[in-house]
Image (cartoon, rainbow, N blue to C red; front, side):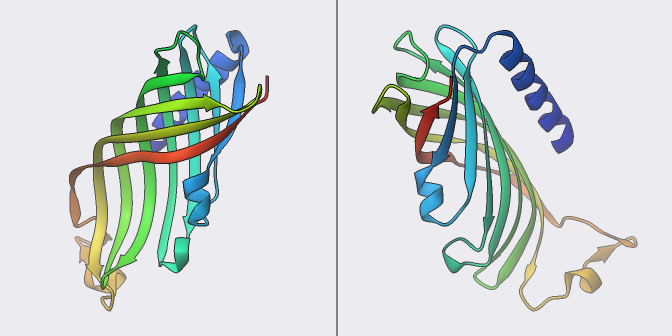
Length: 186
Protein backbone atom coordinates (compact mmCIF):
# COMPACT_ATOMS: atom_id res chain seq x y z
CA UNK A 1 0.00 0.00 0.00
CA UNK A 2 2.75 2.45 0.96
CA UNK A 3 4.78 1.62 -2.11
CA UNK A 4 1.77 2.01 -4.39
CA UNK A 5 0.98 5.43 -2.89
CA UNK A 6 4.61 6.51 -3.28
CA UNK A 7 4.76 5.35 -6.93
CA UNK A 8 1.51 7.18 -7.79
CA UNK A 9 2.67 10.42 -6.15
CA UNK A 10 6.15 10.31 -7.71
CA UNK A 11 4.71 9.53 -11.15
CA UNK A 12 2.32 12.48 -10.85
CA UNK A 13 5.15 14.78 -9.78
CA UNK A 14 7.51 13.69 -12.57
CA UNK A 15 4.84 13.92 -15.28
CA UNK A 16 3.76 17.35 -14.07
CA UNK A 17 7.35 18.52 -13.88
CA UNK A 18 8.12 17.54 -17.46
CA UNK A 19 4.88 18.83 -18.97
CA UNK A 20 3.69 22.00 -17.24
CA UNK A 21 6.01 23.21 -14.49
CA UNK A 22 6.40 26.97 -14.50
CA UNK A 23 7.85 27.36 -11.03
CA UNK A 24 9.66 24.91 -8.80
CA UNK A 25 10.45 25.66 -5.16
CA UNK A 26 12.46 23.78 -2.55
CA UNK A 27 11.59 24.24 1.11
CA UNK A 28 12.45 23.25 4.67
CA UNK A 29 10.16 23.49 7.67
CA UNK A 30 11.77 25.62 10.38
CA UNK A 31 9.66 24.10 13.18
CA UNK A 32 10.83 20.59 12.30
CA UNK A 33 14.41 21.85 12.14
CA UNK A 34 13.99 23.33 15.64
CA UNK A 35 13.36 19.77 16.90
CA UNK A 36 16.49 18.53 15.05
CA UNK A 37 14.37 16.72 12.46
CA UNK A 38 15.80 16.84 8.93
CA UNK A 39 13.15 17.58 6.31
CA UNK A 40 12.89 18.78 2.75
CA UNK A 41 10.11 19.53 0.32
CA UNK A 42 9.52 20.34 -3.32
CA UNK A 43 6.58 22.35 -4.62
CA UNK A 44 5.75 22.88 -8.26
CA UNK A 45 3.11 24.87 -10.09
CA UNK A 46 0.53 22.74 -11.92
CA UNK A 47 -2.02 25.41 -12.84
CA UNK A 48 -2.86 29.10 -12.64
CA UNK A 49 -3.91 28.81 -8.98
CA UNK A 50 -2.54 25.46 -7.85
CA UNK A 51 0.59 23.60 -6.85
CA UNK A 52 1.58 20.04 -6.04
CA UNK A 53 4.15 19.33 -3.36
CA UNK A 54 5.98 16.45 -1.76
CA UNK A 55 7.58 16.78 1.67
CA UNK A 56 9.63 14.25 3.56
CA UNK A 57 11.13 14.03 7.02
CA UNK A 58 13.22 11.69 9.10
CA UNK A 59 13.40 12.02 12.88
CA UNK A 60 15.82 10.09 15.03
CA UNK A 61 15.62 11.13 18.70
CA UNK A 62 14.18 14.65 18.24
CA UNK A 63 14.80 16.74 21.36
CA UNK A 64 16.49 13.73 22.94
CA UNK A 65 13.27 11.65 23.05
CA UNK A 66 13.33 7.98 22.03
CA UNK A 67 11.38 8.50 18.80
CA UNK A 68 12.04 7.43 15.20
CA UNK A 69 9.74 8.67 12.43
CA UNK A 70 9.98 8.56 8.63
CA UNK A 71 7.18 10.29 6.73
CA UNK A 72 6.20 11.61 3.30
CA UNK A 73 3.45 14.13 2.68
CA UNK A 74 2.11 14.81 -0.82
CA UNK A 75 -0.24 17.78 -1.05
CA UNK A 76 -2.34 19.66 -3.60
CA UNK A 77 -2.80 23.39 -2.86
CA UNK A 78 -5.30 25.87 -4.27
CA UNK A 79 -4.36 29.57 -3.94
CA UNK A 80 -7.19 32.11 -3.63
CA UNK A 81 -5.04 35.06 -4.77
CA UNK A 82 -5.04 33.90 -8.39
CA UNK A 83 -1.31 33.26 -8.27
CA UNK A 84 0.40 30.09 -7.01
CA UNK A 85 2.85 30.29 -4.08
CA UNK A 86 1.33 33.60 -2.98
CA UNK A 87 -1.02 34.52 -0.10
CA UNK A 88 -3.93 32.36 1.20
CA UNK A 89 -4.38 28.72 0.25
CA UNK A 90 -6.23 25.55 1.13
CA UNK A 91 -4.65 22.16 0.57
CA UNK A 92 -5.63 18.52 0.40
CA UNK A 93 -2.84 16.33 1.62
CA UNK A 94 -1.94 12.80 2.53
CA UNK A 95 0.61 11.37 4.90
CA UNK A 96 2.39 8.06 5.08
CA UNK A 97 4.64 7.33 8.04
CA UNK A 98 6.49 4.61 9.88
CA UNK A 99 7.34 5.13 13.52
CA UNK A 100 8.94 3.56 16.58
CA UNK A 101 8.08 5.59 19.69
CA UNK A 102 8.91 4.86 23.32
CA UNK A 103 6.65 7.03 25.47
CA UNK A 104 5.49 6.82 29.10
CA UNK A 105 6.63 3.23 29.56
CA UNK A 106 5.10 1.94 26.32
CA UNK A 107 6.42 1.18 22.84
CA UNK A 108 4.46 1.99 19.66
CA UNK A 109 5.97 0.49 16.51
CA UNK A 110 3.99 0.69 13.27
CA UNK A 111 2.67 2.64 10.33
CA UNK A 112 0.16 5.40 9.77
CA UNK A 113 -1.68 6.64 6.68
CA UNK A 114 -3.83 9.71 6.60
CA UNK A 115 -5.72 12.30 4.64
CA UNK A 116 -6.39 15.87 5.69
CA UNK A 117 -6.90 19.57 4.94
CA UNK A 118 -4.26 22.27 5.25
CA UNK A 119 -4.82 26.01 5.50
CA UNK A 120 -2.11 28.62 5.20
CA UNK A 121 -0.59 31.81 4.01
CA UNK A 122 2.53 32.33 1.87
CA UNK A 123 4.35 35.61 2.38
CA UNK A 124 6.95 36.68 -0.19
CA UNK A 125 10.18 38.01 1.34
CA UNK A 126 12.25 38.50 -1.82
CA UNK A 127 11.64 37.60 -5.45
CA UNK A 128 12.75 33.99 -4.86
CA UNK A 129 12.22 33.54 -1.10
CA UNK A 130 8.87 32.90 0.61
CA UNK A 131 7.77 32.08 4.13
CA UNK A 132 4.89 29.62 4.29
CA UNK A 133 2.70 29.46 7.44
CA UNK A 134 0.48 26.39 7.47
CA UNK A 135 -1.68 24.24 9.75
CA UNK A 136 -3.72 21.21 8.92
CA UNK A 137 -5.67 18.35 10.43
CA UNK A 138 -7.00 15.06 9.20
CA UNK A 139 -7.73 11.44 9.94
CA UNK A 140 -4.73 9.23 10.58
CA UNK A 141 -5.29 5.48 10.33
CA UNK A 142 -2.69 3.50 12.26
CA UNK A 143 -1.65 -0.10 12.73
CA UNK A 144 1.09 -0.85 15.20
CA UNK A 145 2.59 -3.14 17.79
CA UNK A 146 1.88 -1.67 21.24
CA UNK A 147 3.51 -3.13 24.31
CA UNK A 148 5.15 -2.20 27.59
CA UNK A 149 8.81 -1.18 27.59
CA UNK A 150 10.07 -4.28 29.45
CA UNK A 151 8.17 -6.80 27.31
CA UNK A 152 9.97 -8.86 24.70
CA UNK A 153 7.58 -8.39 21.79
CA UNK A 154 9.47 -10.82 19.58
CA UNK A 155 8.91 -13.64 22.09
CA UNK A 156 5.74 -12.61 23.94
CA UNK A 157 3.48 -11.42 21.14
CA UNK A 158 3.62 -14.04 18.42
CA UNK A 159 0.26 -15.14 17.02
CA UNK A 160 0.04 -18.28 14.89
CA UNK A 161 3.80 -18.27 14.41
CA UNK A 162 4.12 -14.65 13.22
CA UNK A 163 4.27 -11.17 14.67
CA UNK A 164 1.26 -9.01 14.02
CA UNK A 165 0.07 -5.59 14.97
CA UNK A 166 -2.05 -5.68 18.10
CA UNK A 167 -3.49 -2.16 17.85
CA UNK A 168 -5.20 -0.32 15.03
CA UNK A 169 -7.68 2.49 14.57
CA UNK A 170 -7.81 6.14 13.62
CA UNK A 171 -7.50 9.58 15.19
CA UNK A 172 -8.33 13.11 14.13
CA UNK A 173 -4.90 14.74 14.53
CA UNK A 174 -2.82 17.63 13.23
CA UNK A 175 -1.22 16.49 9.96
CA UNK A 176 0.78 19.63 9.19
CA UNK A 177 1.77 22.51 11.42
CA UNK A 178 4.74 24.60 10.46
CA UNK A 179 6.59 27.54 9.10
CA UNK A 180 8.47 26.70 5.90
CA UNK A 181 11.14 28.70 4.16
CA UNK A 182 10.92 28.28 0.38
CA UNK A 183 13.40 29.11 -2.34
CA UNK A 184 11.99 29.34 -5.87
CA UNK A 185 14.44 27.56 -8.18
CA UNK A 186 12.79 28.28 -11.52
